[in-house]
Image 1 (cartoon, rainbow, N blue to C red):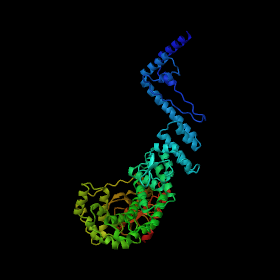
Image 2: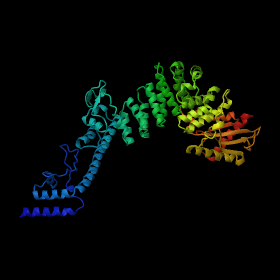
Image 3: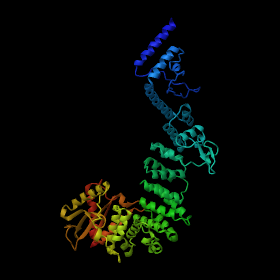
Image 4: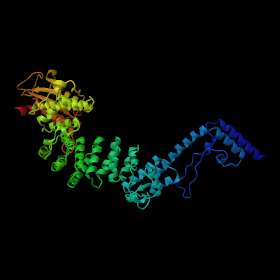
Length: 575
């Protein structure tokens, strides 16, 4: 009687359970105690679905062997498959939280690696474990040799994207945890662990465990993927700059190019690269490509180091017979961008520039850049200018670009047309026929607008009359004048629209960070230097206002005093 009553009571309970929103099977999920040490528990909350003949129902029913109760629970489970899925996913989330807690509470290598023994970890959790181990290794809390051959660590690395085996130099495959693991080379996809991780802070922690060639590969891959992760780039730059290994010329060029593509500037890393370039340059006897690559990247970064540029250009001058016309074009473009004339420039002019012509270049744009660069370096000939400032060359440019010339190309043509007025033998016939097509609307950047506004506020305090000042004057030379005024000998303003024989016409140009070259020798870049020279040829006295001397965060009075001091200096020098 007692047994029948118990069975009946259980049966009624199971039937009533149909009205609950959560299956009664979920309430019976439990943790299985770990083995003897009792340090960890293995969490197994996800239950498998029952199939005919399965004993899973009896287990779920609290271990009961009664066939009636088992059948009742089996019936409930078959009716509530959808509900079970949601419960299982909730249990998974709970399991993840428990595993995360276990990882954070671990204080030793053994405790961390034991997590993967106790339960199955996902990619994110494996990343946390490896990151912690990498951090401990970098601060000398543990030694890499303590765990690098541990099978559990190898398994975690495999989960993060490393292959289970590695290829030796001879092509044979060996076990990653074997005795020859240290001598093996990583597969092509081994660094996807770092590149594919979205958690940038976690990925940055893994960089310290990479070799110097691997870090260079990561940097190049980031540039190829256009992935500008600042935490990752900072970690890479720090570890590469502090690495004891020496970079060869190709690695120097690859790093500089990656930094330029990612618009990532790091003075310490660039200085380290330049130091290695100087050391490696003496070993190079016949390879022109890495030299030009380094020069091109320095130009893209606007990094102006006179010693490095002199050494690189000196090597090219000494091996001028190896320099191709396109490489000469890249060299001249970099020097023009950096506004730098090396000590070997006379040799480069005599041995290379004097022999180059438009026929040496396949694309008209390359010849355009070469002549423009020579214009900035103030060593262009009238014949070279005449070759680009005519309607036929302009038509060829349009054909190459399918009628869509970039604004930068139009600006270069305008620059050269203005410079041609002072170059003997130069013939300019382009503006007469294509002036409208060469028009370029000038829109300063947000940072530059702020600086210009700050300058104009100070200028209006000195010269309040609008008839005495012109602002944002568009020229036919390829740039705008931020402000223009005329001062007499007593530094008093004169009407700007009239000519004054005794007056000094001043053009004010504001220069922000992007108008300057960085590095040991900070200076205006070549474009801005050319603009100033063209204005001086037109009779202006140019006042450059660089961002590192004039700040909008300064009080108005300080900015006014800055301009007043500059004006007095200009007027005094003219007397």
